[in-house]
Length: 197
Ligand SMILES: [Zn+2]
Image 1 (cartoon, rainbow, N blue to C red):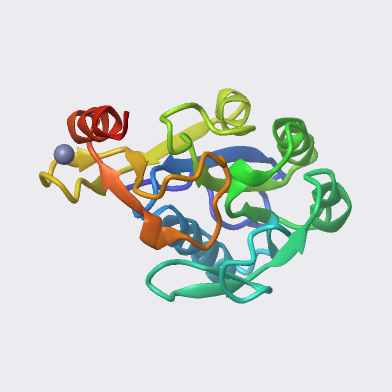
Image 2 (image 1 turned 180 degrees about the vertical axis):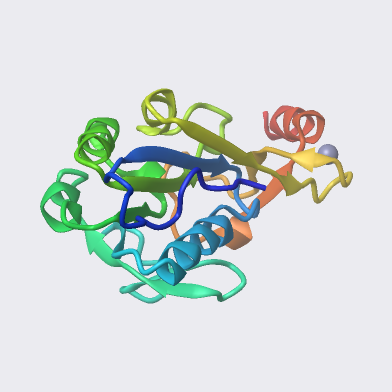
């Protein structure tokens, strides 16, 4: 389990930022892990702000909602850059569904961290084809800490890191359709992709 180098800012502590990424497939518990870390920061009386891309309207507009309904309030924004203005005065900035942000995300997170903000971003590292997802590879490169969480393959019970799509759509972004996906291990993902052809 990830343990923060520092949670609060004691009287002697200088304000220092860094970037954490929580990545993995669907159903791997990314958002739950994000919420766990943010709640710990809140206990340490840190000023916490959570952002998510405005296009993720899957559940309630203002909440980061994980699949187990453990939710936390968040602000939907259109561009990664909006975080500089809205999150600059925070101790901790949380980002959910980071993969849906624009390519400016890594740069924005670096700027926040450089100015002393702790940034925690959760997102899918691969799309349904198994390709790196949007701004995630760049963001992971510039992060201090990357945690890959895993799901369980619904086909065989092994560790899963792919989000396999049962639906036929070719769109990369298919929102609110968790029923159309299942977590699969490498073997079962490859078999499933072969069966689609
Ligand atoms: Zn499997």
